[in-house]
Length: 178
Length: 250
Image (spheres, rainbow over the protein chains, first blue to last red):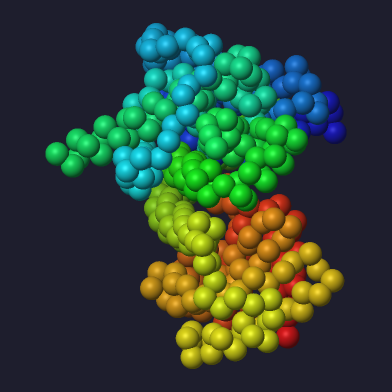
């Protein structure tokens, strides 16, 4: 088997099991099936092309998710999404602790549809960090590597993303109730 | 006592990102403090809700195949497309694939529903102060308790010498069908074993499967006329070990 064949086989073995996860993440980023499909195809093409530069033994998942995310940010939708400003700076002081109230109990019972709508409406910087943590179950270190940001920023952004999601879900529940 | 310093660490704790010393300290505190334990459970449930809601989009199998082929062509250009009958075969394949996609998507949705329902049942077990209706480590107490309550019987394994401990059991329902939920403990983790009649779920999951469900691991298999599901947040190797014990039970 030649080097190129070995490389392709190795890539397929590492990349294909992540296909569904990459697609789900791509669709969340783009909000559009066609764009998500294009994004995934382009990600696989770029990753295959750059596979020789991937350092064996390092985190392949973070590597290929980073390619997808960078490809998205360079797309028209990605450029538009990235220009939405966040309300606060990532390195702001720690957030106050959230306590259980009747309202928090109510939003814990929010339906999956309301939750999905709320995630969809988050700014992309919050959406991506939340999805990588909660859906992809990446460690803070992996998220930092994927988004090329410091771990401290991952923690503060994640905290804000969770808060923003709760507030969006609350708002939706109140709107539905009135 | 102020709870804030503890609660400020809860997210990192649930994300598995606390240093081991801090993790143990918080573990101890959660065993003693009902308010922090309740808050921890609430955030855990929220994480699971986000996890479930986030798994929203399913790729078209045609796209997967296209990507797979493009990877394969990365080192050797296939020549099969030059075969003269390819166009006809491709047309038929496209039609069949169309039916296949519909069936595939229906199956995926049904599988996800069943897995989600099982994950919900397991979460409610974790959240309950009294997870079992029959509380006993003795299989000769737990098994007879189900007699007359469910429409089948099952065997429980001898656990002596294994890392598992039987906590108890209760009657559970999957898609309106009654079955048994057995609760086992391994180290600090609770694992639920659900047993239902296979006909209650036979159109759903494949016979033997291991998969992740909302950050839980799940193993399922068929044994005679019964379908077993083992679900928990302990490692997949633990679930496989419990599966092995249950499969050999007499």
